[in-house]
Length: 361
Image (tube, rainbow, N blue to C red; front, side):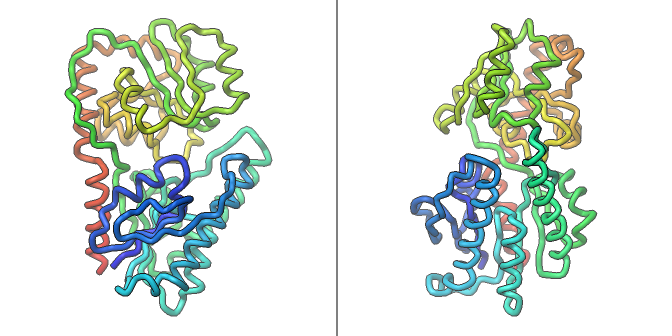
């Protein structure tokens, strides 16, 4: 039996959805949350209430404390509630110090450990203080990865690029499972007018939207920037005084997502080389048949070369090249995007994970 662990089920983002969509018929889920979500075959742990989004120190503090609370429960309390013996523990998130502590306190009875790692390189900020903290955290990250070579640990990532980055430090098994798309039943139709571009998600320095706006002069396309941003970034975008830019500064509720994506034609991903994540909005866009327009970052180069679901762009010729995509080519890109989502959704993620669990036992 496998224990599937999510220490951050209550955080905004993919955390709860990721846990919820993994089938656990023969396994058990343990999750740290603000309230009991009544998940089948699961154990709920009350989280520490910390405003992790207020600043970077609270963010790291919340990560550490809630992960530690979860691993201490797994080590000292889980046997009282689960009678079946677990031989594998799968952490859906990676907090290096907590993982090392888990290994140390279970050293003489260590189960097989699986860890899903969603980002490898650090996210870089404009703040010197933030970057110091980030680089210290990444130093600990890679030292921990090296130490994991000496224990019963296997890693899971969502891209070949992340596997290549980690392979320098980790010499044991690394599985690659594509990040999942939503299962959306829509019919892809030809469009006569293709003019609406979407940037979706948290506005952050490494996502490059401010650089994009500085470099690209939008005249024939309308851009929507929808996601949470700082007052500084909001003021910058508002100051551009471009009628073709629409801004919505808020976290987006699940029931609003479908309308937003179906109301646009492309998703733009102007991420910088400092971007370290798995590009969740990209897979959301593919679910709705939106082709993606990407900066020339390795993670996108590799993906587009394989799946042909969008285009790389050059800021100097952005609109010119986009205008060259006629309705027939757009239709082809859109069909490939939606086909990818049908072949790589949450169901497939769950099947891939359960194949790994079964082959370990």
